[in-house]
Length: 156
Image (cartoon, rainbow, N blue to C red; front, side, top):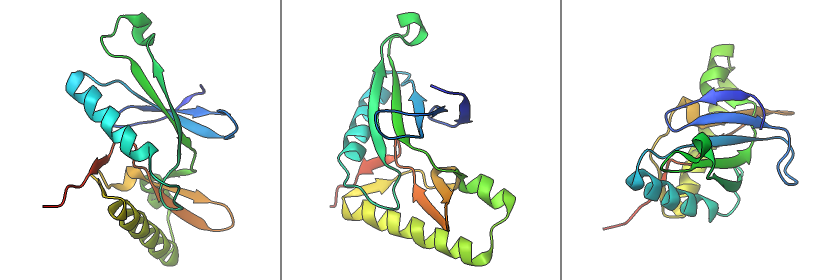
């Protein structure tokens, strides 16, 4: 695992040069504080790992359970969620400045990502600038980060 590149409410994100055959990726380290959070995390990962691939949702490549977290003294192990790497989050992109047409493209990408999740019976519980990830190649594209933020929608 490489250097720390981000920190959020649910964990710390580290750079990875390679994982399996996926090339550049990131690993998000999450340590559930208690059994209820551990069970919630397991259920959320089950939902997101079983999603079909979609252009506007960040791909999760795999999950690693680190039982030696904290020298094995922690009651609950660390969970490393390995996912595709994007250039930056939307918060950082907006601080650098984005043209109007790029902002519209990002808004459309986010809406398409949310519609896809809803079509799969999931809701994103934490849509915010830090959970919209942006990449620039020949043009700007954005994706929703759904790990540890998706839950099953149960219609009444």
